[in-house]
Length: 199
Image 1 (cartoon, helix red, strand yellow):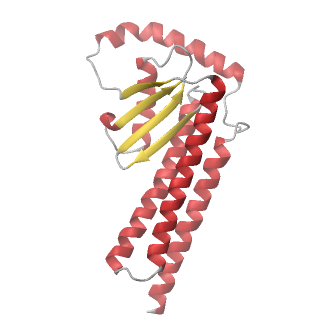
Image 2 (tube, one colour):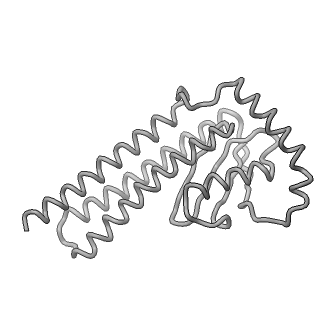
Image 3 (cartoon, one colour):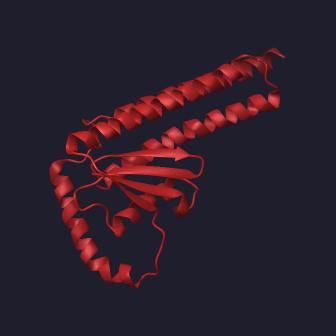
């Protein structure tokens, strides 16, 4: 009996440490001084390469049948306002997740749950930790593709991706790149991916 209790405590401790590491990594990569942030020269080179690719692939895209690349929505904001949007979105996401994880931990530690309920709570906590890591990975990959900033929200099979764009907005090719990044990290369908443009 004592070993089962110590195993549960060890599992809970492992999950808490993993959550702490995921939150720290998310915070670390969100900093502007990150070594993974694109340098201005690299961003210009990426923009030139993207323009050349768009010119070459325009006939190919026109020949393809209509595909659902996810819904693109426009959110207007000035430059400083869009930066504030991303900071506030990350803060809200972090606070919401912290509250949910605290509630799960309290439920598990109170001991009033059956073993099945505890297992379900532990599985839900592990899924939330996996979502945190996936959101961080998606955001880093999107930034590596040359986008200025983004924030990802994963809710079950649905993914909302807010991306900072220029005045031109996103092209179909860029939306397809964003969709492919998400599909590479999660098992979901393209219809569950919503892309929001933040200008």
